[in-house]
Image (cartoon, rainbow, N blue to C red; front, side, top):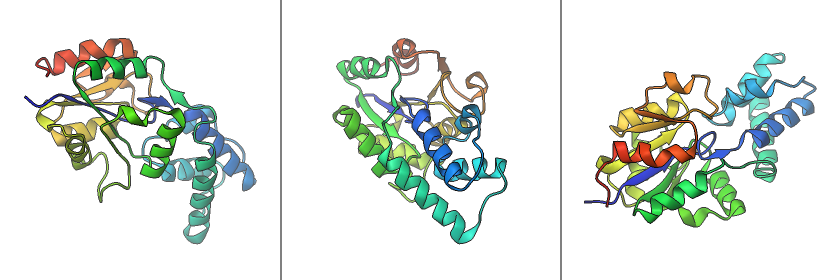
Length: 225
């Protein structure tokens, strides 16, 4: 049987990236003479890329610029964020240990994120963990992205796995939607960023920490190896 494939979302699932995203949003608002938004508000906007964070934060503070002005804000956001990806961001506690345990059991490990692939790969390099993953795909890897299930399916295949023996781990409807569309079981983390409470997500299992991941995976993929 094909070895199991464990696929992680990045922001709010594998890693706590909100601090540097929030710092970027606050910097951008300040550059435009806008007031800050709350950290909680910004966290609710993470998951679908920079666009929702810009539109949400600027919508809350006086309106969203359009056309060329919006494009300018997007370029400013991406340039600043790229220089500050890991200032205050890091994998969640227990995440790397959980990956090590799954790899020791023969699992393939992948990331399927709606963050741009260049940013994702740079982040993994700065944390020195890129070697842990059999495949990493981002918002611009394919012509489709989560919640389109093809994003997840193609990530699994790039990792050398089989969607019939894989599981998705995420924190938002974007992740559970992709998993359902792909026909892949999904585990939701309760410590993520999404607006929807984890227990209300359409998941097969829920975990409060990565210490609970092994059991959840074993229950969903009981035959491994």
